[in-house]
View 1 (cartoon, rainbow, N blue to C red):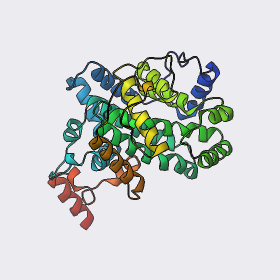
View 2: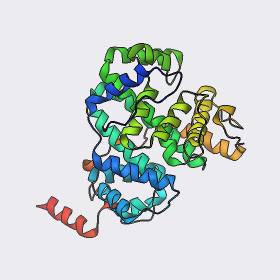
View 3: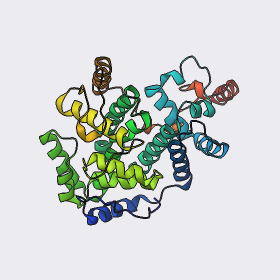
Length: 333
C-alpha cells in the first residue's frame, strides 16, 4: 500500500508511537494496486467538487475495473442486497449499468471495501478471518441502512463508518493471534464493539489508527481520514467539516445509540456538530432495518463473491444471450 506523506495525524490524545506501529502492522499486506488507488482518488476528487457525472477518463478507468469478474460479482451481489432496483425487471445488466447505478463516493467505498477484503483475507488464517468477517457484514448492513435512510450520511459513508474499522482488525489478528483471542473474549464479556484502551495495551496502537491509514493508502483524502479519526475517537479539538465529518458523526451517533441502548435518538448529540431531529417515520424505518439486519442469517456475503460466483446459469443477468448459448453448448460437449 502506497505510503502517505504523513502518517502521524496530529491529535493530542494519540501517541505518535501508535501511528508508527499501526503503519508497520500494514507492511505485510503490501502496496495498494495502482489502478485501485488512482480510481479512488479520482472518485473522491469528483465527490469533493460536487460532480455527479465523471469525465471520460475516470469513467473508463472505473469501467475497466468493473470488467474484472471479481469486481463484477461484488457489484452484482452488492446491488442485490442494497440496491435491488438496479436488477429488477432487467434481463441483462452491463458494466455500464452497474457504473451508472452509483455515485462517485459510493463507487470509491465499494471498490475500497472489495480490495481490502480480498487483500487482508489472504494474509489471515481462515479461522481467525471469520472473527473479522462475521461482524463486518453486520456492520456494513447497519451502516448501509443509516446511509440509505439518512440522506445527509449517504450510502458510501454509511458503509465505511464501521466497516473500515472491522477490516482494521485484520492486521491486529495477524500480529498477535493470542492477544486477539483475549480481545474477543474481553469484548464479549463487556458487551462492547471495540475497546481502544485495550487495543493500545495489546498492540501499542488502535484499530482507529489502522483504519485511518487504510483509508489514506487506498486513496481517500487525508481530510477524510482525519475526520474519521475525530469521529471514532470522539476528538473534541477537531471541528467536523460538512463534507466528511458531519456525515460520519451522524452515522456513528445513530449506530452507537442503537447498539448500546437499542433505540434511535430523536435528535443528535452535541458532539456531532449538527442539529437534526429524526422523525418518527425515520426512526421506525431505521429500527426495522437494524432489526432485520441483526436477525438475517441469510445475508448476502457480497464481499466474498468472486469470478467463480457468476455464470450464465446462476447469474444470467450478467450475460448476453450469445454468451448463455455458448455456455450451454460448452456444457453439452
